[in-house]
Image (cartoon, rainbow, N blue to C red; front, side):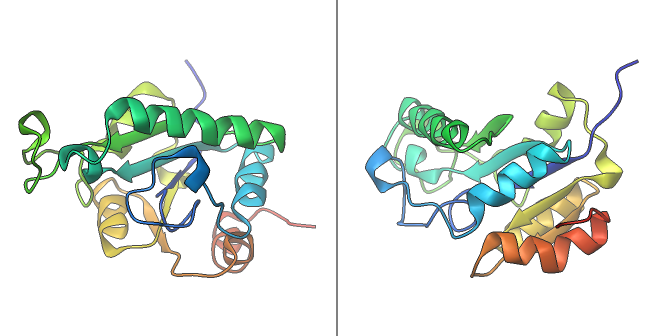
Length: 176
């Protein structure tokens, strides 16, 4: 039997990177303060690190799934240069108000639904009880709750300072 590991599920825009509105181009990647340090912290403490992100820009025709995958690959390449990594990216391309028929639908992956979290837990060996979501919207918190996880609402500031103050006491890891 494979040992289950705890995981942190990050929303992307507004948590890991500055939300410029439908961010998908490499030149628009601007890390949130403390984001890289936070990801590296969880890597070093044996947490699986996942991104769960609604990407309605795909359904609206602003960019493609390939654009999102290239952006995520670029993010991870930049993280690798700084000794960090994201284990997997999950995104929802759907939206009822979309203009691209293929993506114009209700689904179980768009937050607040927990579909992306559940998919990650099926693919990876996740210790759900000790895993959590960090997001910047109520829909992130609802997805966490629906998946049986704790959610931490990050509204602004330095992400590393936020996790030191709010998350670390809950997971009981020492920071030096």
